Length: 604
Image (cartoon, rainbow, N blue to C red; front, side):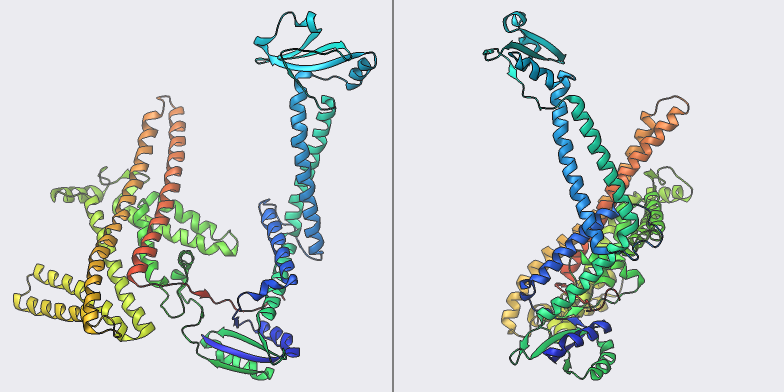
């Protein structure tokens, strides 16, 4: 990246900013704090939220878009009408709830006229409504209180008393307060409201089919205006507000073209490589495969400008680890089909995740074939084709495929941890220079050199050569890890720090290595779950022709559906943990980067 600083006369600033936005290259450095003090900006933020809510709501309707949808319409009017419609529906829903309560109260009393009750009152009679438990109903109440049972539902009795007006009814029952409408009126109102809600729902579908593009265009337009105003407000001024200062960053390979553009604008500017203490945006550059995994890295943090992007280094591991954790060729086939088929049918922002799912399905197929698991069936135990020969050979050595998978999980862990330490050396050299990478390089020499010495002894290399290599490894590694691990400290301090690092290194690397056992454990649990559902399907299916097959298929579909969901979730999360904790820690990843977001037009 190159950093640009502009000094622009205040009357020419917005014109210049329009031209910069037209180029779409400058990532504007924001000034923290001031932008939200502006009322116009706040209004635009609120408008953006309203538009976003409307778009999200209408997207859920899944209506087929009509031809030429969203052209030649007043988008703001569409938004206002839509919001009025939503408000109208919310009010109708509240009224429906209120009427449903009234209906519930009136149902035990049937259809009666409040006018009759009023006429009786005019004639000097008072009607009171009560309910009581049927067990508490007294036989003498009809005579004593002139009580009449209206209905009995379940264990409750509803009744009225008809007594002279002004008389006190002292009865051991619960008085009932009824709404002042007849049940038919309430039902009629409910029907009207339900029709109104259905009408609004149909209008929602019509809006989703006709106006979604218009709302999306409105969102882009408001966002564009918001971005412009934010840059204007976040630009400091000097010389009695006559000069506006604008700062920003541009990818190094685009700076020459941008310089030509600036010369044509006639503004004063300076460009230089940024100070590494600044918050400089990062632009990731990955190939088609590793770019799929940027979504995963974004869940943790972007690399800061000073360090290496680890995406191309963890992507192959993540791909392998996912396949290892799920480890079923049948499930892998399902994921691959879903991912690759859906990648051609979803909106552009979801194409990457769908392709990632498809590629992870391919990894799962490979590991499923290695572990010999297809939809919970163990091909080794079934002696299917060449798996039978392999199983016999492993049995002759006193081992099973699970023994080899366990070893493979630890081996992959050791490879990723050591690879992470190589990355850390490269990162320290990249950021601070070779002197600061000596400590990590020393530990790397001790670990890799130790493994090399062990391998030489195992292969029967002569003792003299082994001893020479061992002493070189110990000498070089010790010097780097214990004596020269920090060029800013003296040797004695470095030795003390090296001892503390030795404790952390031994316990940390061992703990990290054991974490990779989860690869094996998740693969086995996935296979066991599939096996359990296969067994249930065989045992629970009734011995009746046709019905047996139907029940078996239902159990298998539900069981394997649950297993795919749960195991896929685990296969996503656990490799992510191995990446963000074990790999990032051993590679010295700091993160905290800011994504390069050029200031550009979103719509023409």
